[in-house]
Image 1 (cartoon, rainbow, N blue to C red):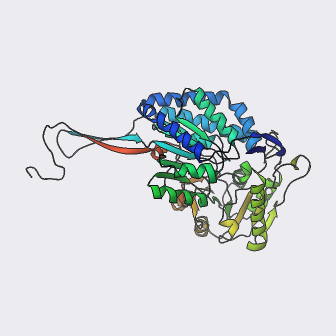
Image 2 (image 1 turned 60 degrees about the horizontal axis):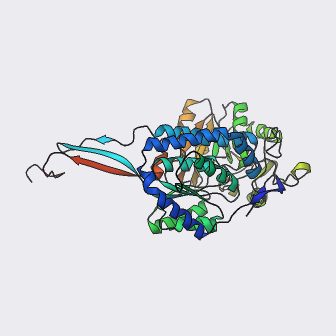
Image 3 (image 1 turned 90 degrees about the horizontal axis):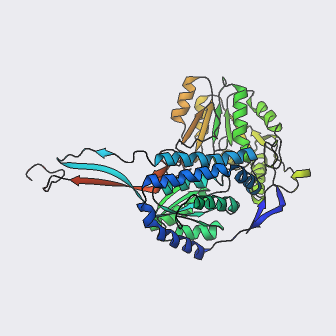
Length: 473
């Protein structure tokens, strides 16, 4: 496979292997061979390896950021943030290696001690997207390793070199051979083979809802664990009393950072503020678009021409099928230095209704839609009107409105006076409804995805004791 710079189609980073089912089988075989020893390694020792990887990521932060910008396209400042998430989470999970795990639980019987403990699942498959090529693999890999599993990572075909460099650093940190294994290639070939492999006992996937459904069906057929982070249609509510400058700054950042290619991107704004839409347009039109390697650039290219054309089709739908009003943007930018990249101007629609496709379907580009509503009840109803529920926010100085949003919005992540993007590694990350299937990444709950709970009871009474039976029965 060719690895091409999204900002310059003439810049080919290299040719990357296209793994097939035989390659996946070899990776799983290597993981099986390493599993017993790794599972028997004390958790603090596993944590020490993860901590060392964090240090290596710090050492390589600049070079990794440069590689990421060239391979994925995002701006250098965003690439640095991507790597920093992997660093922060490595240190967080290393700390978790010495934190309490499980509970001691009183038994109803005398001289009987009960407790819970975690147990690794075995071999787990990680399938990750291209938009956060370091952060998302590490969000999955660190808790999977800390729980005692061995890993096969199927990296996104658009960012193979970032994944390769990450795995090289994991090896340099001293992880035993076979504990982490990398396969490249397409989802249809390598990804499908990994999901179907009978020795892979769990799949962690971040990607589209459509692909997630296919993975869930196969995992259900084999009765294997699966964790899903799927589509989203995030929303911010702007109340009449909101700090307008703060709201515009946060929503523009939420909508257009990474050119909208974030699962938490602010793709809808439910507005009660009469001046908001015009202020957002002014902000969007102030952004500089160009190659992410230019430190002065605000918006970088989309990942590839296919994604660019998909976003353009949604813009056409918004204008012609939905009948929303296009306030700014909507066109390809292809002059001068932009001619060989995948650029779209930051785009704002208004006069939209919750039923429109641009207000319901994930676009994954630099497009946001303003939905005017009359009151807070209508705002919350509009916000909750999609099948997704990942991230939401509200801008207001009214405590009643803020608390209603916090309690009534059907989203796994809710912010007050902050954008929908900006997850922190110590907080659980995940969504409701069709956004996922209930597991949370990051935070102290991250290991739930990658471990089984074991209930242990130790009877030292020296006699048979029957739970739930009366004495003497």
